[in-house]
Image 1: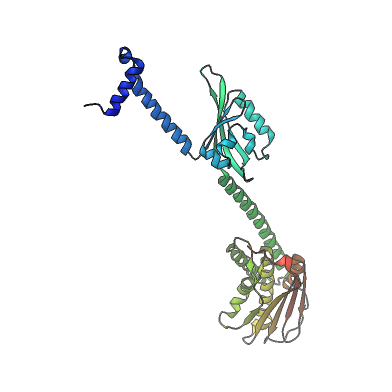
Image 2 (image 1 turned 180 degrees about the horizontal axis):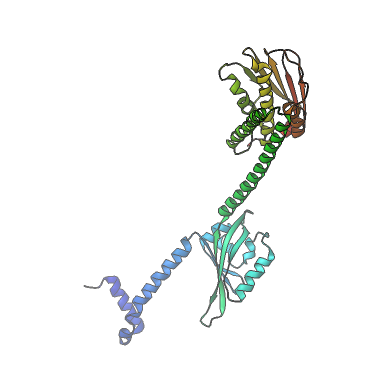
Length: 358
């Protein structure tokens, strides 16, 4: 096959450089050089296009080379980084002993691997997994250090979120167990028979469970008051509509407030079913609320039920409303027992009750 013009030009140039007499000696050298140049070009392309940051420092720790990924990671240009030291992008939040450990290992000719918190030019902190390896010359002396930087910020943030979630879950479980224990203790204290204890305890646990389900829909950021109240009143209107009305502006309550209020509404609704408005088909309940001057005021009013009178002793429900609710939410609750229907008035601080807007 006849050589191409480029090949012929290459051969002529090579002959002029090395001489015809040496052609046989060097005829395998230049193809190898070409392959080495091609390999070097691939290596440079890989360094430029890789997503991990690469830094080469001399023995004194001065940066001599950075790849584009390192520039993108730190926010600095290559011109701003070359000639500086890596302390340029330190966050100041990594313990100094870590850096002492790094230099001790590198000066001993050993690689170091670990995680550091750095800072971008913009001031934003970011996590890296760093691997630093000493480079040696032909004599074995360490001349440079190569650092490979992998941005692991998203992973670290995910781990932190997971830790917070686990801590929050543990906190909720402890709170829920404490509430369940208090419910069991108070229900047992006020129950007249084992059957009554089982009925009342199961009802209160169901309310607690339903409120937790309601809060799960918002990742425990809060719940609408209408939903908290509605889930307690809805069962009494399943067969007879218009058994209750709700009037008031929309408000989201905190998770703790939702649990406390749901238990209070459960006691009010249960009492109405046993002795008040929900015990007769003609009875109904109206609930209205308003926010005035940093206070939340709610009124529960029963109508159309049988004539009532104040209880002779305070059971769990009355205690929860008058003392527990007031203590938990830092307000005041008053119960009235006129013969035409029980009335409950809550006056609570809005800042203890209202959930922050997302």
